[in-house]
Image 1 (cartoon, one colour):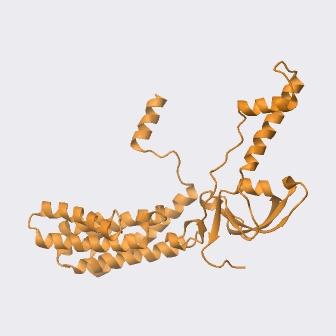
Image 2 (cartoon, rainbow, N blue to C red):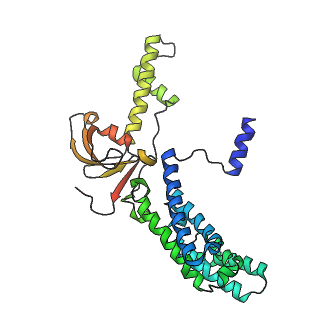
Image 3 (cartoon, rainbow, N blue to C red):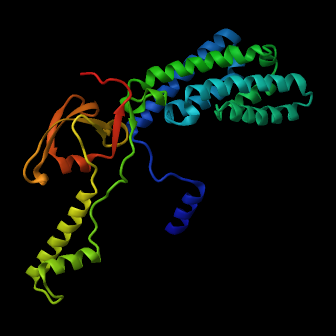
Length: 311
């Protein structure tokens, strides 16, 4: 039963994890605020009936901007260009194609093509094009003006809210170009050391023992195996340097960025210390120290500030 359920979840693309509760709340509040403003503006300018037809496509945009703010589909050019071009295509189809069914189909299809050409794929644009055809008199009387008011205007409103709202949360800057750091190429993630048969054989060779060992010897064998595995893991850790920026890449409020501000070297590299300052995210402005290897195990990516960081 469980196997069948897992296969079904895999088939339908059911995600194995979900955002933290705080992240879900942030996305929900942002979407609610943006759509409330869009409905208010559209209703004031064009009346409630027009708002009912026009706003749904902006609701889909809100999902992208606030639930997936770093998605290519959610970036400002995709939102503004996608809605504006799709609106123009939709109006053109309504004006030139007498058959409503054909006009509706071509409006969505051509909108997809135009968005591809203009590199502004925004899925809700399809709804904007469709509304231009099936929106009724409230939309048809606007003609090509539909693209500017309310579509472009509402797109700008939702973008402004998205930029301002997401700016309050360091880990979800919007647009993505406002992220304070860019990720530098880094090593693959390294998990906990796994003791393999090769490690055990290496430990046996180091201790010069045979298979028929005493409990004490077996304990030492295991300890030596773990030490060898641990040494191999540490050898693959990234080199961390003073002045550089590093992140733990954890989601939501757990996200943190540290800068190494000093180091204390010793005769034994295992005891080298690094002194760091938290420059963004959880623990902002806190300083601390740890061994170089401990810091390297915390690191998941190296970052580079997009602008000069504050002192």
